[in-house]
Amino acid sequence: MIFTSTRTVGILLLLLVPLMVDAQTQEEEVLELLNQVRTNPQGFITSHVKDYVKENNLDNNSYAKSLVADLKMSKKMGALQLSKPLTDVARSHALDMGKAGSVGHTSSDGTPFNVRIRNKAKAKGMIAENCEYGHETALDIVMALLIDDGIESLGHRKNILEPKYRWVGIAIEPHKTYRSNCVMDFAESF
Image 1: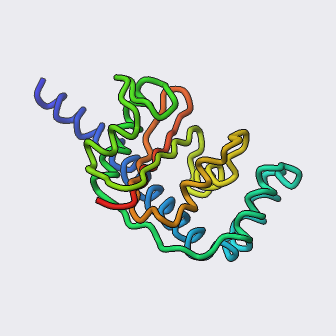
Image 2: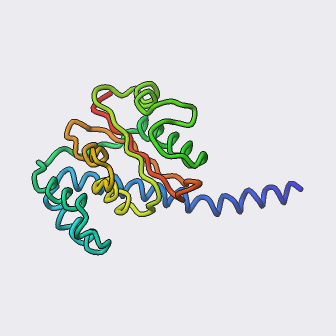
Image 3: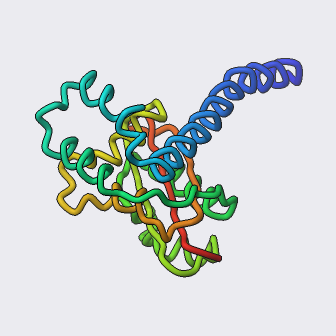
């Protein structure tokens, strides 16, 4: 019986470790893309946006067009630094949303994002949260948030391009309904 349990645990670990490593790699790639668009907005149009828009048939999409216009007008800003406290808060929310099959910025226990970020990560100044569902590559995640299709306020795009944000936490976890979800928590300071 112990042999079977030990073997089962070993097999589970062999199956889960690559998934955890892949998610961590994806999170690093998301951070890299966020910093590319922040530190060189005009260059990001050439290096990523034009091809992405073409490959995804978004040439006539008004949100994609407005992204290009916004990036052309954006000034270079500082790179985001990865924060462990913000990553922990983002991971907790991504796990919660994934398990519940929910979406949004309010945890399943009713806690809004601002309370989670302020109380658990001890963030100060401006704070924000981006949640993205259903995309599995770093580029798809970042481009979906930058294009912000259907979001009239363009809040996700504005969060990514807000020069006051210096810190970010990023977590990608499985989602019961959408297969994958990414949470980004932003802060100005601690």
